[in-house]
Amino acid sequence: MKGSAVDGGGGGADVLLTVAVEEYFQVQALRAYIPASRWDRFESRVRRNTERTLELLESVGATATFFVSGWIAERHPAVVREVAEAGHEVACLGYDHRPLREFDAAGFRADVRKGKAAVEQASGREAIGYRIPHGWFGPADLWALDILAEEGFLYDSSLCPAFRRFADEPWRRFIHAIERGERRLIEVPPGTVRLAGLDWPIAGGNYLRQLPRAWLRFGMAAWRRSTTQPFVMYFHVWDLDPDQPRITAAGWLPRLRQYRNLHRMRDFLQRHLEGATATSIAEHLRMAAGRRTFAEPAARPAARPAAAAREERPAERVTVVVPCYNEEAVLPYLAQTLASVRKAYRGRYRLSFVFVDDASTDRTWEVLQSLFGGSDDCRLLRHDTNRGVAAAVLTGLRNADTELVVSIDCDCSYDPHEIGRLLDRLRPGVALVTASPYHLLGEVRNVPGWRLFLSRSLSRLYRALFRQKLHTYTSCFRAYRRSLVLPLELERGDFMGMTEMLVRLDLRGARLAEVPAVLEARLLGHSKLRALPTILRHLALLAQLVWWKLTRRAGKGPAPGGEAEEISYERSEPAPTGAPERPERQRKVVR
Image (cartoon, rainbow, N blue to C red; front, side):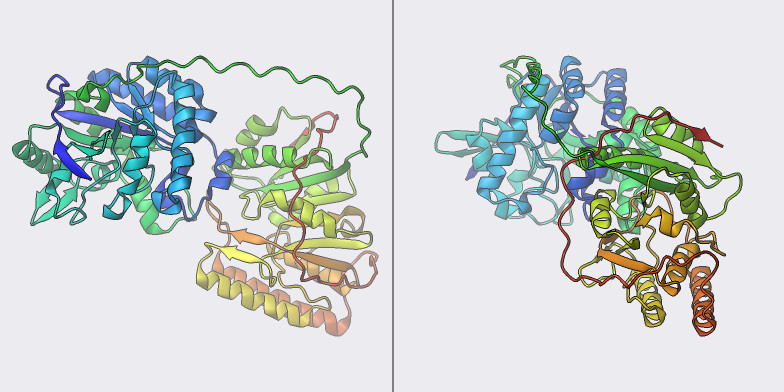
């Protein structure tokens, strides 16, 4: 390929303003912690953030190019249409929001084609520009430009000549046309500043938030001295959202990249844009963005009723207990996840939910009422004082009206979609099934190494003393046979009570089982556990377990009896795609 300079005819604009329309959980800094399969579980904030961006641009009289992914366009078509109707250009950010390194040529073409179609359908206008959603094109990625030209794009803004990436081709710092045969694609790189033989990126959201304001002023002044072309800058709609949920599982560097100076971003952009003439890429290049229009999506025809209702076996009723303590930040994520769980198990399990607020000191109770208070399949309970997670689980068990009960973590550190695997192992006579990340087929993700070492070490000590050799003794993600567990009287109501529950059941001859599971560090909110006190409590319980074994004192209540459940090392079947019907019973709120 060869390049030639391009002079726009955009009427004296000194800034080409571009905006990435994406959710806060889709960003590159958090990809290691939030897989794309979990995106639909997070609270969406793209609508309000896009509206904030439109208000800002209107206040300073600027127009911009909004790069939108097909994933966003399909879920928020009204947002995309609003951007277009406000007079801004809508361009394409691909579909799946993935970096180029994850594609081969065929996969990249398919993603581009699918994303372009979705964006055009949502905006009602043709998308003539493209930008890669993660990272930038380097010298080895120029093959992608051929595909973009072949797919009908007129310009691309994915190439950033940062540092020495294109040191032998300095013309790539500026807007230029790339030609091969009859195809022509204009490249619009974000602004850089040449200093000490390197091209320093200064034009993006993270650079704008992290670097001193004086550095940006210096860079833009240097840009104006080197060219008459406008300066290309960009930011993300979530840059204007200082209250976005914090992903606490991320390390300090990703958190720094994502959250630092968010509260200053709007004022900075407003001050900068008030003194500039900002326009979109298409307007500057005098391209006919939106030269074709697309019809509104047709309404889907109503499904015709089946000729005869298919007889199905009634779904089995299961109660899901959710203990909550100061979980205000995570509850919207939980609500989205449980909606997906309901759908996944429709027809197989008829799920109802018992939420137990363990005397939270934040707005957990109010948010629970807002999210779940109007659902017939949800019951809200509240402790007057903080009693601990084990006490909250027992409260849920006592208030369940089904024999089969599952307890889950409010932070979804174990995926609630896996409840079917627990229930599959809860065979007749089995009192309890626990999720087991330390099983040979289990997995732990993003948990600090020191914490993992301590937890595994404690599990080995318990395993040495237990009659039934489990691999994990501390999980709260469990399935219970209510009639066999409810007679237990625990001395501990806190997190240690979950292990004490296993201790007492094991000493009394109850049958236990485990299922390999994946444990992930919590994404939102903060863990309530403290390392040293937890270790000391476990050591105390281990000492008590030795004493109980020596004296055969297993606690009060009748022993359930039965043989130990054989621990299988075969991977369980994946969770089904059905989800339970909603039970028809009156909601009851208990304080």
